Image (cartoon, rainbow, N blue to C red; front, side, top):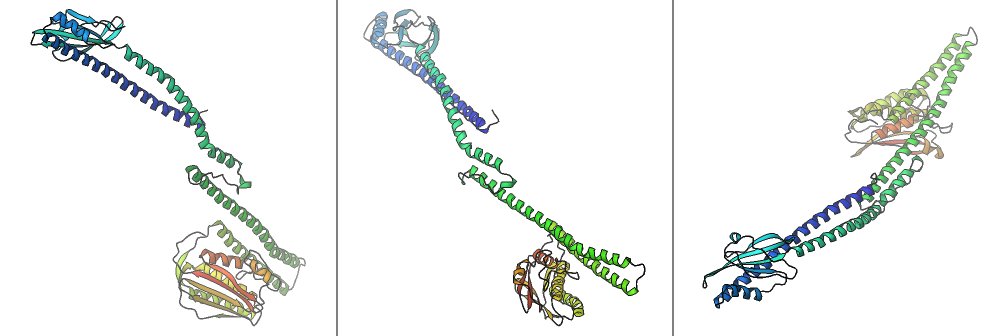
Length: 482
């Protein structure tokens, strides 16, 4: 039962209230008891002062000590008090008892101070009696008296007993009402928590789009629910990314298997055909070996591209940042691509570029440029031209690679950066650098651009060729994994 927060809150509430009520009751009881005792003593003090004045007046009028004592007793009237007048030796001269009150007793004449009331609590007839004593000196008549006023403490005891009974009834009743009220309030206050708990129990991987109810977004529970909903949103995004990554990985494996099957099949077929006859001409062996070498090169480039993308997807490819001149890198890459283009009869033109100091991964950017140039050369017919330009602004550099090929069909343009995508046979723009159309070159080029916080896009494509543009920001970057 104590496992419930609602129960613990109720017990804490009732316990604290009980301590407060007990402290209040004890304080009230002590203050009332003190007030009653002080009021009793004040009444007795007033009585003995009045009796002292009456004795002085009666003796001044010439009455004897006994007559003065009786006159004082008769004149002074307090319904709840018993009175007595004694001589200096303590002998009773006159006295009277209030109805139901015992006659006060003089404890000892030696205990009575002069001119100042003294108070004693004496047991008289099974009751406690509060007694006030005072010595009275009548100088004019040369008389000494002792006046005594007493009152039972039963009235005080009864009032305090009534107060205790009230406390014994009121405190448990208040605690019971407070406990029920605390239980209700705790249940009401924790109702949103119960609702959130039940809703959270129903949320799983299949319904991460559901959210916890938020009754009041401005209070603590509302902020807790909002924070939990934000966590669910992040988890949903993470699950979605994971599902997309799994789907992409499956597609990647399927496409990779398909791409690897063709060169392997060619290699196996070339070997089997060559080995069918025990003796062949040297030219036939050379032709078979050339075919095997070509397919091996294609496999090597394809595996290297797949390894690069796999490391990029796993976030284990760290940028090796350095300062270099991007215009020089562009010129070197264009000269290297021109050698490949010359065999096909395509001219590579590198326009004059402004001096551009850049900080980035030189090796990756070289691979991006080679992929773009290789892709352009492969799909530019003999006699065509590939132009490479570099333009610089205050915050970015833009590299464009333009060719004079047949262009990309409009329906294929949104897909050209997908892995292993192949456009129609007239224009398959998915080759890799020095490779053989593995369908990963443009994907790797875009990843490299994005790893440098840049972009790579197809600027335009038509009957007169295509233009690819890579935009890279000029900024100082810290080494990081991408």
